[in-house]
Length: 229
Image 1 (cartoon, rainbow, N blue to C red):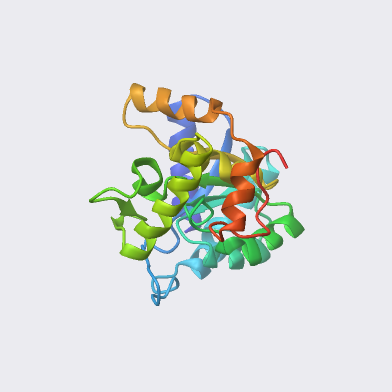
Image 2: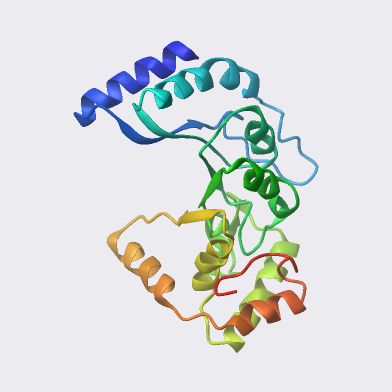
């Protein structure tokens, strides 16, 4: 709601001892549902409430310079396709859904974002685990146990990466950054060691032939922009 936004931001500014913040996002307007094939991404939608309450307040604060950028943070792309045409959003924080394993937004959300000038931050580039661990026993895919078709696809991606002497997590971190709308990725880290690992993956050299082989084998979308292209 508008009142909740105003109270929240007022408290934030006091705690940070500042008169503005760089980025604010409407968080989980689907109540953080995790849906799989056949499930409804709109099952718990707060879209209308967000656009009628939170968004006008954030837009007003942006016009005053109190907020520099307004976005939405969510773990699905379908509802973002509605947000991008309903308001003037500077960015979206999309958890997963545009990764080495998933590229559905290429045909829908990303063209809309390009038209509207909305940038993308990719959270969860490891799809909550499997692109960091590989297709091991107990691997998770979007917070759930990875089903066999996903495990098999990851095995095939791992084999291509191994043939080019590239680690799977490095390919997973680099891939989303190949899209011109993607400003950054947020892999997350539970420790200083994991942070160092992520930085090392970003420094890995990825030969263009890796992406070409993944496309040739149908493991990433043919039209997906790739790093270095």
